[in-house]
Amino acid sequence: MLRIIDFGISKRTFRNGMRRDMLTVIGTPFYEAPEVFLGGGYDERIDIWALGITIFKLITGRTPFESEYHHTTINKIKAGIVSFHDSIWDSYSHHSKLFVMELLKGKEERMTLDEALNHFWLRETAKIERSRSTMLKRHEDFHD
Image (cartoon, rainbow, N blue to C red):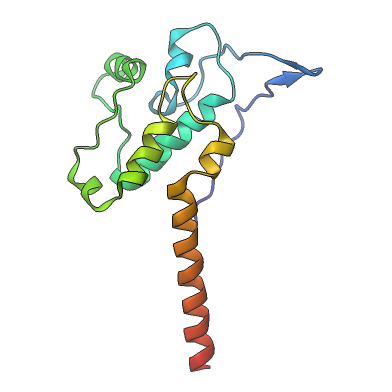
């Protein structure tokens, strides 16, 4: 089970019916979207970026822009070039890589939450998990 925690630094992007960009640079740099470091404000799309980083880390055990030095990590994030050359990705489908790439695109090109939830890879993975759950339930029922 995956639990998402630590919403102590969360903010509302709408106040009094008006959208407002956030400006504060706060949080773990490895998960920050490029627009946080580029200035000019950011919005809820940074959460989609963080989701991409989280999925990448769940698969590989590291974040895609990790570096020994803080400033190098930030420069890599700003450049936004994601590599799937790690051999662990060999066992993952093209669609899984595409999903992560879409989550880690620039602010304007980044997929929305609705697009992410309807992405082929996520839908197909959910179908497989539902099938596994059904098969396990039938197996348990058979042996009871």
